[in-house]
Image 1 (cartoon, rainbow, N blue to C red):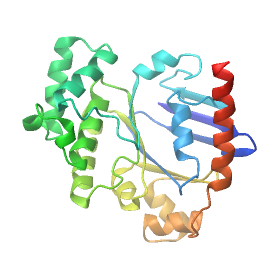
Image 2: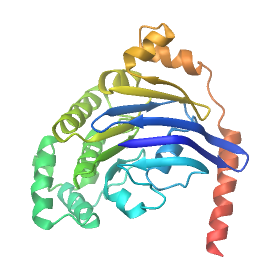
Image 3: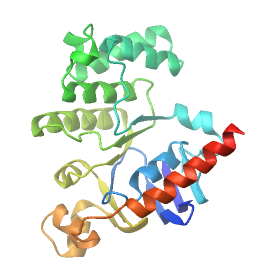
Image 4: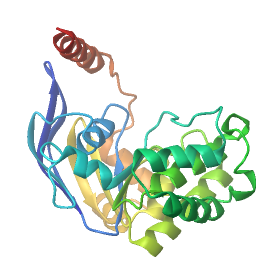
Length: 264
């Protein structure tokens, strides 16, 4: 379902993603793990047509995101780190706007919205403004919305960041239920290693732009001789806090250059 071969992305002199290759089969939950600045979000942005690779090849459901951009976008849902709901609208209205954007037929959208809001335990609050929701409710709504147009792939970029353990467990239970029922391929990033260990079928670990390990959580632990995925992660990536300033500066300069060129 997701094929990535020798993927590279550079920003000026900074290489954010360096010769990364992996494969995610249909119906799998794949956790893409790494420290801050390791290249996780950059990789997902290339997979979801928001960034063009410097080199390498990507296929989503058999299509190249660079040459079939619109078709690829119809086939995935995505929840980024930053909130994207309209707080002044109700949960139901947020769902219906998403349906319009993805050209979901009206009747189908109503039926699908009801199913998903009930599944994610939001049906009773469907007519309330989203700004009145808790953080966990907002995240559940974003993920329910991501499933609305029946995507083949769902990308989740740190969807449980800042949520309490109860909300995190509830959210992943819902995601696993849809994954199993609809065979949706899920690619996620998270800093909560216990989540990845519990939820993911397989794991990939990226560090300094390179994929340093991949396999089932059990295989990763066996490879590193550790008892927990968190210990395995630390053994693979080290325990020091990363300084992202140099790479981020190069990245921002490159974006500024691109933006300036586009404006001209």
